[in-house]
Amino acid sequence: MAEAEEDCHADLVRTDDSERSGEANLQAELQMFRAQWMFELAPGVSSSGLEPLPCRASSREPGLKSVDARGKQEIAKEEKAKELFLKAVEEERNGALYEAIKFYRLAMQLVPDIEFKITYTRSPDGDGVGKRCVEDSKEEDKMADLLTDFQQQLTLQESSVKLCQPEVYVNQTHISALPMEVLMYIFRWVVSSDLDLRSLEQLSLVCRGFYICARDPEIWHQVCLKIWGRSCNKLLPYASWRDMFLERPRVRFDGVYVSKTKYIRQGEQSLDGFYRAWHQVEYYRYLRFFPDGQVMMLTTPEDPQSIVPRLRTKNTRTDAILLGHYRLSQETDNQTKVFAVIMKKKEEKPVDYHKYRYFRRVPAQETDHSFHVGLQLCSSGRQRFNKLVWIHHSCHITCRSTGETAVTTFDIDKMYTPLFFARVKSFTAYSEKPL
Image 1 (cartoon, rainbow, N blue to C red):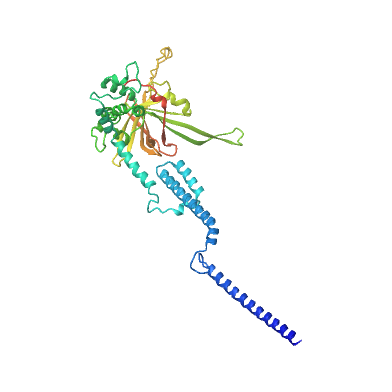
Image 2 (image 1 turned 90 degrees about the vertical axis):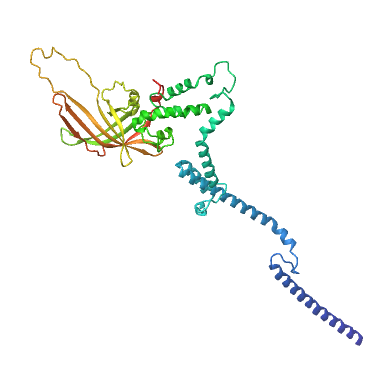
């Protein structure tokens, strides 16, 4: 019995010791787990604090790659939006508003607040707008020296200079076989007496030789003489006669200046007195200038589609047309004005002697009517010299027998709307005589 009790007591002691050691081990494991957890809170450090955690790094790699790819896409999208926005700014400065709106819209579709992410103090893209500006300046320099370049190329090609050569072999005689004098005479026919310089510029696009012929100073000098007369003897301050034609204010001959006027006029009262009619009056004024100094003016309610074809030549059959002469005046305030004196075409009516056969004829007093017009030449929009503003309009009635003249000056009010130029292709469709 005593031995059995001792064995039982020894088993209980061992059980208590094993329970205490298990609790101690559990506490130690818990402490180790807490320590390892604290170390794992630091990114990239293992429980020893010396090596990176391979398991966590491997689990984070796909997420980091996706974040980096997304960031690169955002940066590329923002750079593309910046490029489109700067291109839109450049188009707006050049006057191409529709193109600018298109690029603005594309840039804001990519990044809505791209306008606030661009710094205008420096060029954000080294290969963007700044480079394009440098390239544009280089292109302008090339265009300025294009005539010299073409002349040098033609001189170096052959000892006998030819303006052009056929692209493929032909049996017929090529235009390059013609002498230079004949070619220049053809070019004068292209310009014609109507001064169709637009056709001359289109002809210069054919080849290098035609480009050289179209820049002949003699042609442009004669054109300037026909427009300004003796007042253009000096070339300065222009670089060439062509630059004078392009830059100096002038009226245009390849179309017509048109104005449209509307107003409301009160009509007569009805017979019963219950209402009074109001009439809307609408009419047009047309001005056509010719290089020889003549001008035509017509005031009519007919629309341009029916009137403009009649204004092609001075020998028109429209009775209401006024014919006259004009001159350009350069004022001291650096404004160009157009002064014209126009009158109705004279028509000689046959005298009916049978009408005055049985009674004494009292001759009517014959008078001449002339209109003096003053206009200021302006530019509006992208076109040059396309607007005429009224500054003076008067009627002069002269008695033939006494020579007395009565002058009536009209007030320039809202009824005198500005005249705007409209190009008419049929006016320069064919040439009547050379320059």
